[in-house]
Length: 438
Image 1 (tube, rainbow, N blue to C red):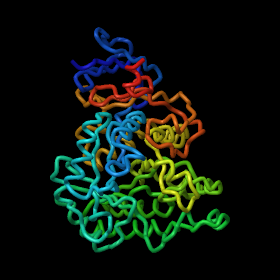
Image 2 (image 1 turned 120 degrees about the horizontal axis):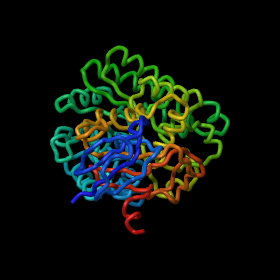
Image 3 (image 1 turned 180 degrees about the horizontal axis):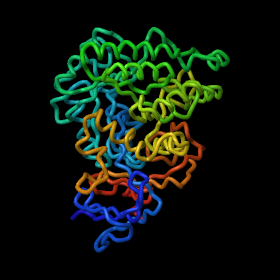
Image 4 (image 1 turned 30 degrees about the horizontal axis):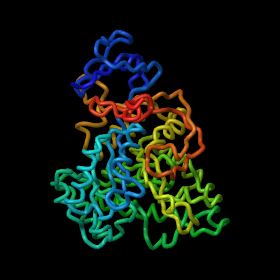
């Protein structure tokens, strides 16, 4: 028998307080505050808390198979639940690469076994991410994993002919190509954003145009073949302008920004702390302002974490030898609250749009995720206390890796509970196993 939950005096999307009843995997009742029957139910006192549809991440690295020393599907999805997510899309740069039906089905089944969130594998665009020939896109789409998002993330599909073919191919099953926009010849040996800071500290610069040139090319290719394009981790002011132009032209393009690109700048590279080494690199304060404005006006469709866990030895070294990437699942919502909600640029309803409804739609999982908070809808939900404040401690996070750029930072907001089809995966801010053990 499933547990019944009554969320007492909760505020859906930050609106007026109500009681929300979860039963049999769905939102069973929405009643006036303090009036829902509690017989046989677990009551969650939620006065002042905001209820959101479960968050959906279109860009997560779970590392399994191949790099279980950094993360596993189990640990990564547990971290996702702790961050308020009910679905994640697992990127293809595993070992072996998720470029066949067999590998994407393996990741999908590992997600089912873990049970913390729904795992939707992302298929590679090219075999081995090598950019030479298309992977088994149709077979992955027809597999049990039902792949609809394809990406060589970590590498750019730099050959325009191959990119055109991929865009044409995915049209057959309503797929989308998610491009890692990085012109490889312009970024050979690059370590950080090209600019004043890179010149001052002597690290090879990564010009903004390396990202912008690929986005400009690809939106034109998408228009030419009439296909869907998604831009991963957009990071520059110029990229925002190109996407804005493409949307005004009617091109079917969507774009994401990461939490770290909403708040951190390349000034942090002056520390030579490789925690801040990421792809694409942290940019300037002007770029940060541009991506915030783009998210606020709808040019950028979603926030995606690009959660990239690494083993300690891959980060605890000199900057040039360190791996690119940061963790982000457990801090994403707090960073969005700090930069966009508390500043008045987004409402909580907007947060539900950019962190749940839009990513679910782009990833074609909107039948279960990103749904309205209404009676009869799936109970994939996140309960947030926006008034809480917390100091991030890397070693205390649920993810198996500690390479968070926010260690020691005080951030607003706390995920109090996460529900996957009406089952609590997080209660009182902790994964349910920890709660049950008390």
